Image (cartoon, rainbow, N blue to C red; front, side, top):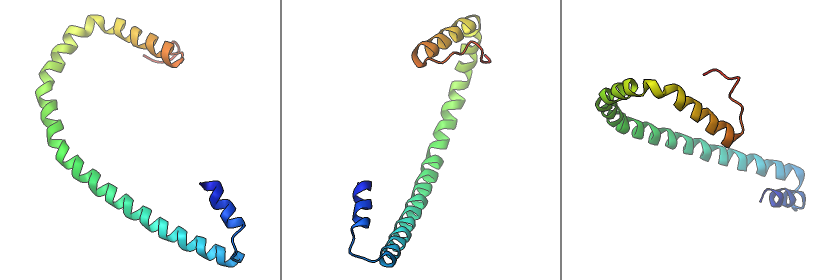
Length: 102
C-alpha cells in the first residue's frame, strides 16, 4: 500500500506545489483524526479503569489471607521453583540467567 502511494505521488498529474499542499492537508486531516481517536481511547481507558478498580481491590482484599498462607507453605520450595523457572526461560527463550541477579 505504501509503495502504491509513493508511486501515485511520483506519477501524479499535479505539480510539486499542489502535491505538497495536498499532502499537508491530508496530514492535518489524519493527525486530527488520530488525536480524536487518542482522546476517545483515553476516555474509554479511564472509564474501564474506574469500573474495574473496585473489583480488583475487592479480590486483592479477599485473596490476601490466602496469599500469606501460600507464602508460608511455599517458602521451603522457593529456591527449587526459581531454579525451574530459570531453566525453563533459558531453554525456551535461550537467555542465560546464571549471571543475572535472583
